[in-house]
Image 1: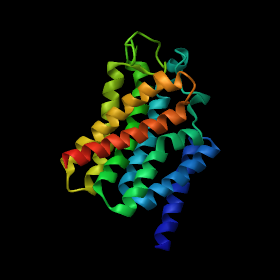
Image 2 (image 1 turned 30 degrees about the horizontal axis):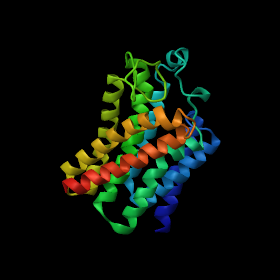
Image 3 (image 1 turned 30 degrees about the vertical axis):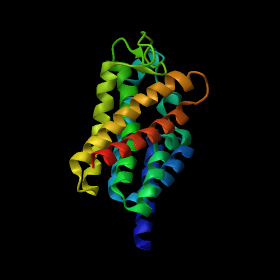
Image 4 (image 1 turned 180 degrees about the vertical axis):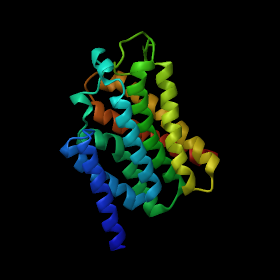
Length: 237
């Protein structure tokens, strides 16, 4: 047990340092990512940790993709794409909460919630970063009126496709943890996809009014996405 914990600490510490060296996270962000990653791997094991790691890699690549073009549009991630501890918790804390419930209950419904939360974060990042480039004529989710790329609550067909693909990728990591594979695939994918659109809805309403910021919007969306995934799994199973 102690040897496994030591190995886990070394792995997440190395990944945290790597994310700092590659300028994906600042120092506080790297520390938060290491602690969150350690929590995920200790509570849920290899599969949710692999999902979270894949989310980080895809998020970095999507953020860096045509960054200068996004900057010209005024829609690039702030601080040259370097994220901090608030971004880490906003995208990963909900998954840790659900994994804690799964750890003590051993219920598949909390697996669905955990992976749907990560699916929401991954889908939202891909939809946001790549939708700004490939999405044409984005519209505000609440009114469907045209808005500028990067506007809180803006959606596009390309962004929706990236959101679905991002959620589906995370759902694949959930298949080994359950015997209800088809149901888990549907619950996590749809939970994540719905969670992404809830993120847009929160962005167009609460965040626009200054009630939430980007990090708290991400947390609420991933939390709600997890609840949706759990609810779908419960109903279908």
